[in-house]
Image: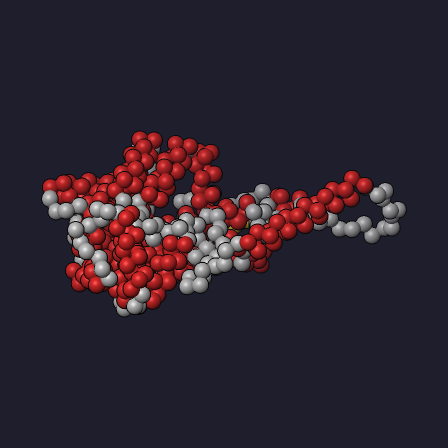
Length: 454
């Protein structure tokens, strides 16, 4: 057993397993099944005397059921080890602060170690004095404080009750959970604030830029995002995020451009930026996503699907990564991948709800013959503040037409013609969908509903 802290008694196996159970059952690890299996595996291996054997390749085989020598799986282990360390830090900063023992998985390896938490011992309840004693004088200040505390709690509960009475109901077609803070991101920001504020600012700029990239057809938003990514690179040239964002933005712009030298140059710049991101962070999910989008725009479909799938496997909880995987698969006609990537279980309850997953899922439904679900999701997406674009308006109009709501189809067409008078929706769809039949399925429905291309 790896016991690095020798200043006091070592934890017994029973105490270690109890500490492990406390961690695994905590809300901080809810939904993180892979990280829980990772932690359980390394702790049990350590207790069995196999700590020195813990390597990425062994964990990849035993925990992730990957074949021996799979480099991608070993990269996944290293990424998950970092995620596990952040979750543990979060847990012991909150719910686990009073645990008797703390489990560490130090950087540079996977063998755990265990440390007694002094704070837990100091705060342990003292044994009552068995001898009788005279009652202490009444502390009126405590009574006043307790009364004020009770009043504050009652007021807070009343406020919550009033808010809930006036709160909108959850959407019918997609069950919703309350938005939660991204706890891992909070820990990351705290570390960067203390150690590398320039990178923290670069990270903030990249996140702002990412929020502008969708809806994709809006060139002005993409150009604004490019400015933010350029500033992030200036602040921290070693941070992969600025290059990955640049690769994504230029891939989107290139995909929407007509064939010619300008498109070729844009796509080359996109690929170079994605490669710069990869050189700095080879296993970073957004670096792989930038590669995937760039490959898609260049017509390298197999690479696009492979890189987006790898990014999703490395960051299964990252809704941005899921969004791009869903869109790439949608435009390539891999609708089963789109539907899996946009499964509500990946998104509901996560931060950054206002993304494109509902729009992508609805389009996949329409193109696979379920226009009623498409209408429900697209109207819900609009109500919840998801990205609005000429593409999702076109799909909504086509879906209305498919379910026989001709008036709504015409109203939707009039709306997107007013909002985007020079939309070129037919050229846009033909440029994005690899199979011309998928673009035609939307365009033909628009024309049947009364749309006339300029």
